[in-house]
Amino acid sequence: MAETAVSPTLVWLVIVAAAVGTLALRASFVVLFRRVETVPPRVERALSYVPPAVLTALVVPAVVVVDGSIAVSPGNERLLAAAVAALVAWRTERVLPTLGVGMAVFWGLRFLA
Image (cartoon, rainbow, N blue to C red):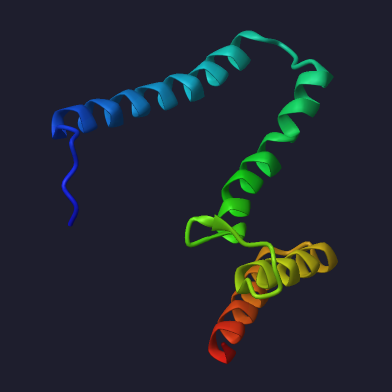
């Protein structure tokens, strides 16, 4: 296990600050929407883009970055499995088949490699 130059107290302070910041951000939307009678259509439309944006921000680095570097090539099993999963999601619009097929393709490619 590697030693760090950062004190454990500082790490805990950063974790607590991140937790408080996240909670405050989430609570601000709850408080805001309690005070507003109707949500403007532009805000509603903008908020509808948040889940795909968050999902993309989580998935793309996990798929494209291999061993700390960007790997966009046919040799990247994650990228191929994600492409197949995207096709399944597009055709079926169902989560479980998308996950199942994506994982099966990933494990199959890993087994063959």
